Each structure stands twice: as structure tokens, then as C-alpha cells.
Image 1 (spheres, one colour):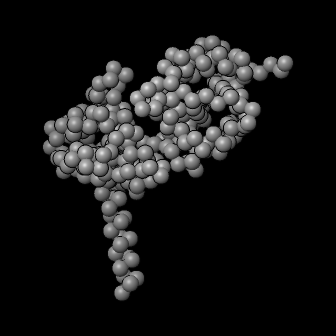
Image 2: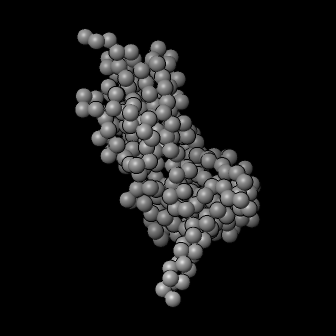
Image 3: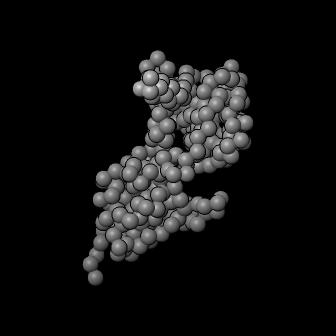
Length: 256
């Protein structure tokens, strides 16, 4: 029997579009002995895994966990010691609200080699896919990326701070707290601030709602938007419509 060094590589799978995964991530998948993947991973990416590897789904679907986080940690260590190279495949980037750092720390404490392959974060790519830049000269000099729900299942206090700034605010895992988020921005007098909500971004299931702080709750209800979704608040949201208007004007000029 050939001994394989126990190793964990945490890999970012990108925001959903199968083409938005890095070449390095694909190379790592081809040499994995075991792959543990989440619900937000596009399952077409599993085709890159070599046929001899064990593939295990460890994500959450319809509110039900296949494995709790402690069980995933233990599974990583057990499979690495019995099989060798374990790849933990996570949606987006594993270091942006992906718990990748926690899993690496746990694995390292049991003597595993650890590595990470960064992924394209949904916090950046999903707005971009809708022509919404997070920064734009004259509109936004910076941006916040915030979790909507903390580990205590409460709304993040950072959202209150972000609402006071002129920065673009991107909120992940925030749909269940949307009414509270709206109240924070209304308290700062930002009732007319543009808001975009993008559900299942970069996939064929994508749904988009565009409004303002005052109108977004009604739009969400009308369009039945829900998780997984990205919430973007800021003047940069207007860029999306600006591009559409320019394209429409150009098309009309061609027809004259």
C-alpha cells in the first residue's frame, strides 16, 4: 500500500457559473483523493474530479444540514489520514464567509498539510455580472462586504456602521434580515438609495430585483426573491440601468 501524505486543500469554486472557476482549482480537483463539496457549488464542476476519487456532499439544502460543521471537520481529518489528499470545495471564495480558515486550523491541529486555492467571490462577481461596479469614480471610493447574519443568528452591527458611510455596501446571507437592514438605512436618511438584490447570481436561475431602500421590500415580495442572494446598496447600482439606456439609444440610432 502506498502511503499518501494527509493533506487538506480548501478550494474556491466561484459564484455559480461553471466557467468562473480558476485553472488552479481544476488542477487540484484532478489530483484529489476525496472531495467534500457544498450546496452552492455548481455540480458540473464535479466532472473535473478524477474517477477514482470519493465525492461526498456535505452542504445544506432546504434548511437541512447533511453534516454539522464539527462533523465536517472530523470527516476531513479522517479521510485525509485514510485516503491522502482531501479537497474541500466551497462556493465563492473560501476565505469570505466560507469557514475555510476554520477548517484549515482544525486540520493543521491534527498534523495535516494545509493549502488554499482562492475563488472568485460572489460578493464581487455577482454584482459585476449585472453591470454593477462596487467602486466607480465619483460614486463610490470604497465598499463593505458584510455578513447579514452572525454566528449568533443576529444581524451584524457592522451594517449600522456601513449605513453611515458613502461606500457601496454588499451584504451576504442577509435576506432574512432585510427589513432590519432597510430600517438602518432609513434611519440615516437614505430612503432613495438604490438597491439591487440578485438571487442565484451568474446561474441560469438568476433573478434580479432593483429598487430603493424604501421600495425594495415590496419588490422582493412581488418577485419572490429569496436566498441565496446578494444585496447591494449604493449609487453604483444605477450603472446597470445607465448601460442599458446607452445600449438602447445606440440601437435606436442604428435603426434611423
